[in-house]
Structures are given as structure tokens and as C-alpha cells.
Image 1 (cartoon, one colour):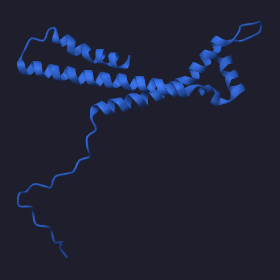
Image 2 (image 1 turned 60 degrees about the vertical axis):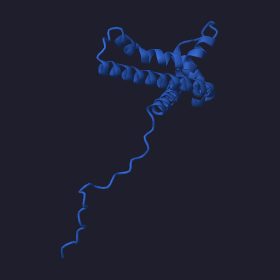
Image 3 (image 1 turned 90 degrees about the vertical axis):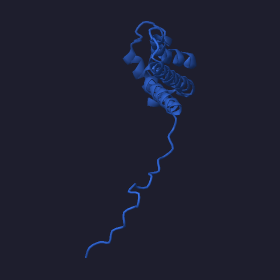
Image 4 (image 1 turned 180 degrees about the vertical axis):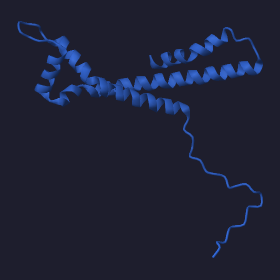
Length: 146
């Protein structure tokens, strides 16, 4: 048997679709910087631990201070967890700095685009302003990130 269909809307326009609230780009940049900073600390910490131990090794007769030997010694003495010893302080500092760098760069980039768009609307000469719009994101990121 044929299905009964709903009558078409009088205006012919479908109902509006509700969208999730849009997160501002600043917060996206901040979170992306934080996550990438934390990931970089966790990825690089074993190498950093090995290099720090290599610097602390006192060279004597028969002591191998190469990276492989020191890496193996760290694992032998403390297990694989020893490679990430001392990660907590770095995980507090580096992600915060990275978040500021990302957010600052994003703010600078958006400001530069707004400036460039305003120049196009006014049809002004942008020989010096194009340099400003080119380097503004780098300057803003450097100022905020330290």
C-alpha cells in the first residue's frame, strides 16, 4: 500500500539545522599548541634522558659513553620507565609555552589577514603593509611564547 507523505511546507524551505557552537580559533590554537607540546615532551624525553646521562658519565678506562651504551644502561638500571623520569616538570612548561606560541601566531595571522582585507577594501598601497602582514604572525607568536 502506498505510504502517506507529509504535505510540503508552505514556504518550501526546510527547517533550520541546529549547529554545535563554534569554538573560537584562539582556543583551537591554544589547545593544539598544548597537545603538540605535551606530545613532543613525551616523544623526546628518552633521547633527552640519554643525552643528559651521557654528559654525566665520567670517562675512565673501559667506560663506554656512547649513546647506545648509555641508553642500555638506563634501561638496565631503571627499566623503560627510567627513560621518562623527570618528565613531569617539562610537561608543565613546554606545553604551556607551545600553547602560547600557537595562539600568538594564530592571533597575528588573523590580524594580518584583517589588515590585508581592509587595505584591499580601501585600495591603499601596501608595499610596506604587506611586510607587516607577512611578519605579524611571527612577531605575535614570539612575543606571546617568549
